[in-house]
Image (cartoon, rainbow, N blue to C red; front, side, top):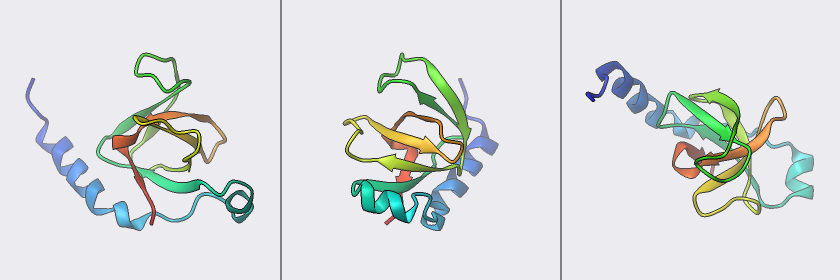
Length: 102
């Protein structure tokens, strides 16, 4: 299967935008949940948010590139971040597709 050149251009552009992440987690969450961080979907066009931290788990929702999420670092695993979307959907995304804000 060949790589789509346009897809590669988009992914490269997304990598350049990783530094543009704004805070999604609220101030109250930062106080009540000290191990949260904002993240953004990168290195893919669409990302599955799964119900469990398993590649074979059911998909709760699919989110687009550059979607901002709140990441619960305490509930994350070695391979998956526990995330919450701006719509309130919670689940797990593969770490390699989420860039955390600094």
